Image (cartoon, rainbow, N blue to C red):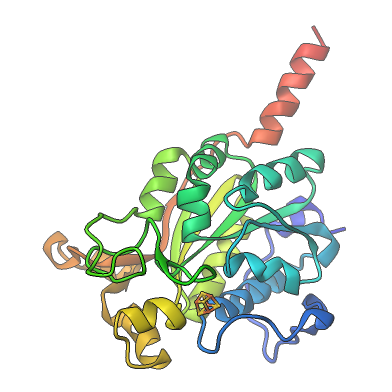
Length: 287
Ligand code: SF4
C-alpha cells in the first residue's frame, strides 16, 4: 500500500504515452456518455493525476450520487459506490471514517452536489474530512433531459427555463470556500492538461478539496443554448471568459470583472476530521 506520507510528496510528472487500461473496468465499456460529452475528458485527467501520484487501485474509493457524471465510478477499477441522489458526501464520509487510509474521491454533478446534495456539500466542506470532490459542472441535469441546475447562468435556456433563467447561479468555489473547504480550485474540460495538474494538487491535499470543473453537455445545454456543434461549445468554455489565476494576477480588477478564474483559488491548513476524531478518542480514553 502506498503510504499517505509518500503519496503526498510525490512530485508531479506527466507520463507519455499513457496506458489507461489498468484503471478501467473493461467489461463496463462502452460508456453511456453521449458523443462530445466532457465527462470522458475529466475522467482521463483524473486517471493521469492518480497515476502521477502512484496510488494503487485498491487504495482508492470513488463514490458518486446520481447523474451522468455519477456514472464515473462504474468505469474504474477502484473500490466504488454509486449511491443516492445528492448523498455521495454522506456515503463518502462513512467510507473514510471506516477506513481513513483510503483515498476517497467523490464524483458529482452540479445538480447532485449543489441542489439535491447542497446541504451535504456544505457540511462536508465544513468538516474538512480528507476527500477530493470533483463537481462536473455543465449547468444542467443531463440524465433527466435538461432541467436547469443551481449553477446555470442567468439567461440560459433549459426545460425548466424555456425563456431564459432569471435565477443568479451559485459560484461553486465561493460556496466551498465559505463553507470551510481547505482546497478549492476550478478547471475546465477544455483545458485538459491544466485540469490534470489541478486534480493532482487536489488529490494530494489533506482535507476537503473541491474542484469545480466547467464541463460540456452538448446534448441538452448545447442544443438548448444554440451552440453550433461540440467543438464550438468546448471552445466557448474558454471564449466566454475563463482566465487562469496567473493571468488574473496581472490584470487590474476592472479587467477581471465577469471572468471565471481557473486554477487553485484557495489552499489552507486546518485539522482534518479523522485526525480530530482520533485526538478526541485519545483524550477521552486517557482520562
Ligand atoms: Fe453528457 Fe449531457 Fe449526454 Fe449526460 S446528457 S452524457 S451530461 S452530453
